[in-house]
Image 1: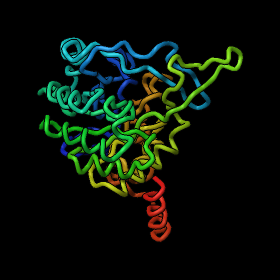
Image 2: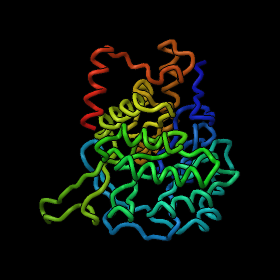
Image 3: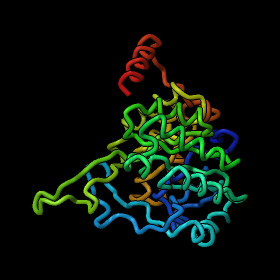
Image 4: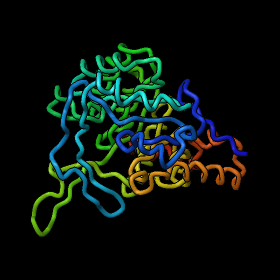
Length: 316
């Protein structure tokens, strides 16, 4: 039987598969056994209550979807009392995702959510930074370092920095997160996009632009995971367009230690169990004894790889 156990820093997971924040709810327990997942990543919470973006919030696209949900939240107190407890009943590490508008709000929220029943804090620094005219914290190494440093000082919990694929220099941003104290990085989030109804001539999203997810962004996400793997020593959780066990293997070969599954769960709520079963079948077929051995093992021509790395560092 193949060994699917992996480690993300000091955290041990029974397998590398977990949901992506915002693409998972407690109701999914009707479709799959949460005790079989690597971790449970809950939807993001913000310190302030907010209603989210105007409707419509979702638009289907070829090989994916656009969303502009806006991370609605009822605040930390409601989250602690109503949202978090059902997830802690399972024998699976709970990851709390936090979104905030400012560095101080991030630090305060992370400190407040560093609870014994929470295994990891995921800091969604791909969200807008109101102190930088709405530009995401993770768009720039300097703002990334500032946010991650403040978070690191506010908690002793392991925490993962969730980055954005919309940054021009993702490897530099990842390095800044590592140097500021992140235990791992999540690479990444949705790619900024837009869609227009040609009959009404109006944007299909109420917020005009939104995040593209699904299989359409997988090659982008895979490339960014590989870039980050070449630049940092901390673990990487890959995310973006994962639908199959083969997708997971690709991300691990590119450098991921674990993965998050998002849009695919909207199509099939039980997809993560199918992916886990597929990983077992792949390892048995390919003679892989421990799946963690796949991380970073893509076969590259050394000279070509070094030349590509220099180009990627220069161009972002």
